[in-house]
Image 1 (cartoon, rainbow, N blue to C red):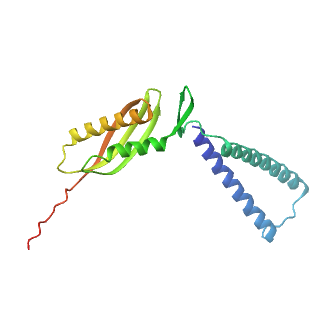
Image 2: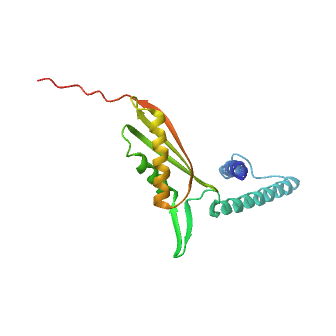
Length: 179
């Protein structure tokens, strides 16, 4: 929700800066005459001060947002051992998943996604398989291989391994060479 509000504020901020820039260009180029009456100058000064304060407050908000760390995107998984702390990046775990799955024949175009949950790692593997493979057997073997490999290597519990078969590729047909 905060991201939507920040995007809306950024839109309003950009629009305000754009309008202020156009007005400044028109005033400086002489298209709009700068001479106004006494009453109009007071109203214009009050409006300009109000807009300046709002733009300053929006600027402070965007400075805060740019320096704030996003707490929801966890890039490492922290573990404590008797010797100290261990941090393993999510990218490392994704690469370990790909390594475990790449050992299977007939599997290509691999991608992995890791989510950290309270019960453990939630892993999704996307793959393309050859057409002559048994998909239920292959995916079951892939799930077990990823689960066992990750728990053995990292010591982090794996709660779920989902395998998404994106497509079935045609098996390569080898033509025999006759001489």
